[in-house]
Length: 283
Image: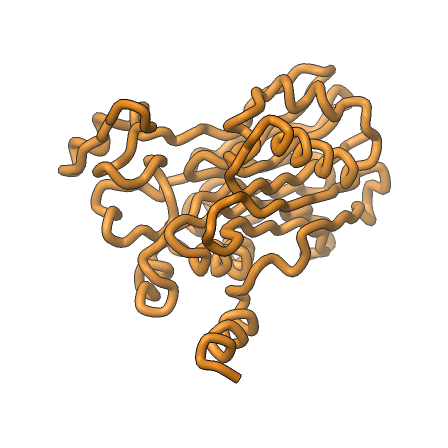
């Protein structure tokens, strides 16, 4: 076994390998009509797949939690892999998760980022965006995000964005107040210090003084008008609007088929980035 193979095996055992599967589905045991499906497609770049997904229902203290996330790594995939293995655990360990859920999520994001920075020697200097969704007993959905992976919900056919795209141009003042700058070169997107195309992320130690890992958090009550939610990396959103994504899968009943359809549509539209998509069906 070569040194590279040994390193890969160690990383995989530690939860830093690629996602366990590029496609999958599941359903709630409490609300049988709530289902999910996910699908990942590697982009055309020469590096390894840098997107990771979490999609599962689990029992916690006589409650059912739906845990869903897209982690889009950059400059290496180890940070995204670490998030896949640890972020939800850190959130659920917060002592006031059940009473002050939003505050617990914010604290866990901060703690997780601090740990990643401490582990730079093992995880590298790369980073990752994140969009996470926690569904409590099929009734309340907590969305949090840093970066440009996005969560969109469909209510009565209308697309509603629940996350915030953290673009450098939108947070220019904050970045400059921390001593950084936002480049805006012709033919390129705005970048923090001429490097990173998002203003918030986990990791990225070399840029951390000018970056934030503070998430935006949204709370959504699931009612009879709520049809489904989409979580996806920017490989999808670069080529599709929120409403286009909603319209393209509204007629598809199966959550996995809906997720596959979105990734295939993004490829048809010439997306060259890694594409990861979760569809969560409520009815």
